[in-house]
Length: 132
Image (tube, rainbow, N blue to C red; front, side, top):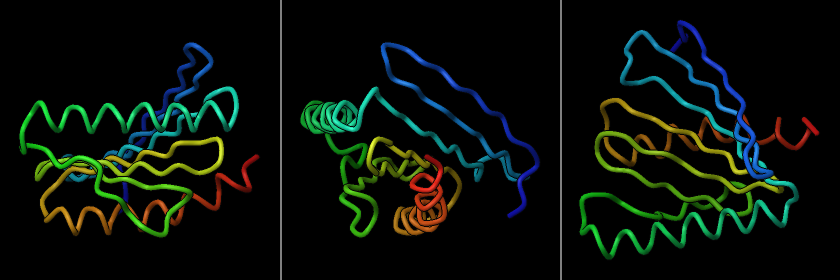
């Protein structure tokens, strides 16, 4: 798919920088959001990762089964997790001092979305390593 346009933003708060790029497709529901989160150090980024996914586990016990939390995805970065439901979802990948988040919407099974997100992540991750 060729995207129609992009919207970019960078925000820094409390030593954490979040850079986001939204790729708008002709079919809006299939558009993609790519987000990079970096803390002051690789250690701080890892702590952020642990906090984020520990809280997801707590939500699961409180909310019931409406949403799928923390499906581990093998073979990406140091750790990778898919979260979402049948409408939309996001793949989170921990790689060094960066958390990559790829958010997808649109029709299709969760398995298809996970595969699509993995394909995009494999294109982005090498650029994170060489981009320093």
